[in-house]
Length: 143
Image (tube, rainbow, N blue to C red; front, side, top):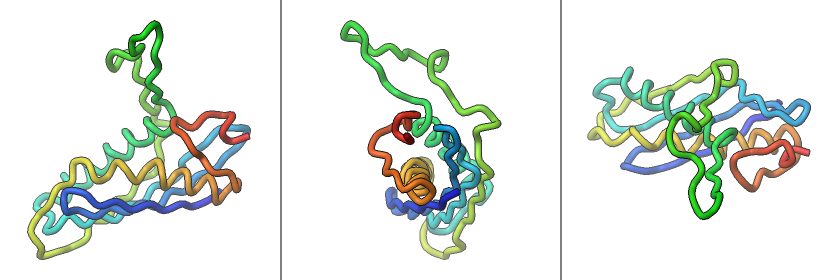
C-alpha cells in the first residue's frame, strides 16, 4: 500500500488529492481518494462534491482503462459502448473536503479530474518504487 498526492489549479480553483493504492499480481487497486477543494464560496457544497466524485471516476477510467487506438487510420473507439468505465468494485472510497471560504465562487467542473492519475501513480511509486510514465496503466508497467 502506498500514498500519493497531486495538486491542480484551474478556473481559479485549487484541488488536491491523496490516493491510497496497492499493487498485487500486476493489478492496481485504488482503495481511497481524499480531496481538498477550494473553489471560493461554495454555493452548493453537495454539487461541488458530486462534480468532484464524478471527476474521480472519470480520472480512474482514464488511468486504468482508456486508450485511444488507431486502426487503418481511424480511431477505434466511437462512443460509450466501447469506452470502459470502472466497475463499482474498482471504485475507491472517495472523500471530498470543501474549503469554507468567503472569496468569490469559482469553477469546479474540471478541476477534480487532473489530480486522479498523478496521485494514483505517486501512490504506486510509494508502494512499489516503480514510476508510471504512460496511461492507461498496464500490467507490464507494474512488472
